[in-house]
Length: 338
Ligand code: KG4
Image (cartoon, rainbow, N blue to C red; front, side, top):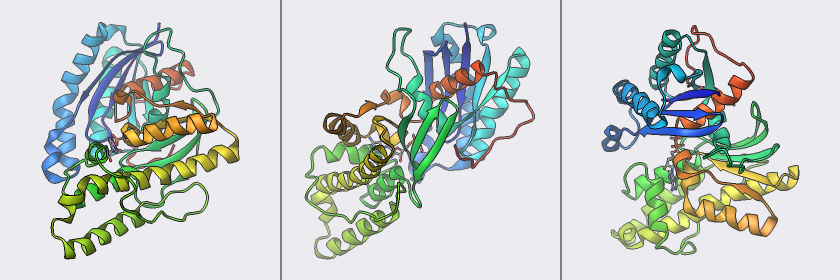
């Protein structure tokens, strides 16, 4: 029996989870409301909140899993990428726990963990995992990538954003409309009541499988600036249609490249991961492509779309099987690729 405690603290969610033989026993997440009034994550406040949260969150995750500390086989933690101060809290905690319990520690790449979230089993009979090789669209506040996943530990980024991430496009455009932070979920909610064909925004022309979202953000901004000159209530009067049209454009950009990669590489096993995978229009687009092009799609449970420790624990589980352990002299990485 292999029991992994996972710790995630790369940004503004403190999370701890227990995975036993690949099955999720608990996944506790403490968010940080402190950033809302600043319209974005404040790194120093994030690390302080992690420090406050980490012990109760780990405690709750063990309690919910119904296990005690001495039943943990190894502790897996996010080494990077992320905010350095935030990562330090989880990394230091993992070092302390592994030393105190005399168990191995396992470093996990946050981006790989988002991809491997698809292997978390709800129970022992859960057989819904992707088959290798598969493509994973990783879309979050910091990333927009198409990843060719060859095995648990062998992944290749075949396309990525050259500027803003898809989540950033949602958030920045939402901010311009005064929708608060993070704006992605608000745009998603309002878009359901709007007309996606009301406004047209230019799509980027970028080679290969790479993305670009900064042009869309700028054209959205200029469009609003011009319309507001004629009607100072333009945003208020068109909020739902603006959200629906913006969302449609972002999703089309994401899906066009993913489709191209799928056709070129002849891979029909397609997954999506990261915070933006909670988006209902993106989920519908996946369903539609599955019907139209025979894709076998893998969409994570909502709890595993945003940052969570279950994905860290499952990544740790597969590394444990390969005996890939880390020594306590390591430091976190703020920036690291897959
Ligand atoms: O993976 P994640 O939790 O962490 C970061 O990378 O920060 O992703 C957060 C991002 C934010 O940009 C947020 O606006 C976006 O995911 N997001 C959504 C939705 N839910 C979260 N974007 C669009 N629609 C959603 N339903």
